[in-house]
Image 1 (cartoon, rainbow, N blue to C red):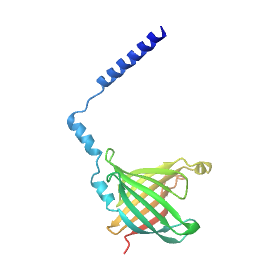
Image 2 (image 1 turned 45 degrees about the vertical axis):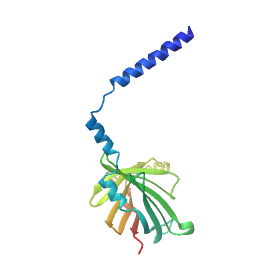
Image 3 (image 1 turned 90 degrees about the vertical axis):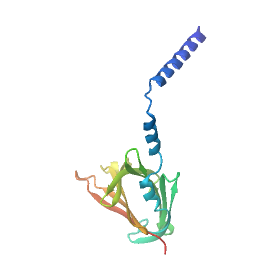
Image 4 (image 1 turned 180 degrees about the vertical axis):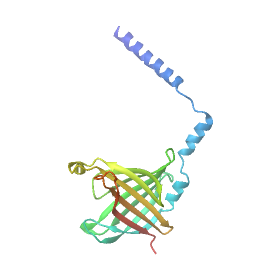
Amino acid sequence: MASLSVRLVGSLLVAFSAGAIAAAPVLAQSDQAALLELTKPGPTHQRLAALAGKWVVEGPSGQASQMVKGTAEARTILDGRFLDLEFSVGAGAEMTSARYTFGFDRRHEHYIVTFLDTYGTYFATGKGREEAGEIRMAGEDDDPMMKKMGLRKKFVIGLKVIDAKSFDLNVYWVDTRTPAENLMLGLAYRFRRPS
């Protein structure tokens, strides 16, 4: 009797699964082609890919308040879908390293970023659009230390291409203490092609 019940339940699961698949909406061939096109890199990806190569970077390092120099390399990954930027500034105990991966989500028409650095043992993400010549990608992180202070950790990563030989990477902190949530520049990096 137990094996009959198992076979019956198995048969019912197969029947329900087949029915669910048959009832699922089928996309028209033109819609399928449009969806497939969205999986490929577009003009925004080419714009990011133009930043590939070696760079000299200047920015803050560790606890130092002055700007220090370093090196960077950006490369496209996953057939041009993303730009992976890795850089270090400073030296020794004051060295800061970071990795930012930029992309453009063609489904939702916004830029995306994932980043991690030697300021922590976690990663964060952001998304956004271009505003006033700067691609601004906003995110929020569940930071326990910020919570202890009664604050939320919100940020904006800004990528501003100046010309073919330079771009800026800015990290803005969002002042969550006020309803206006104004942006405050936290970290500013300037990238230039080596001469």
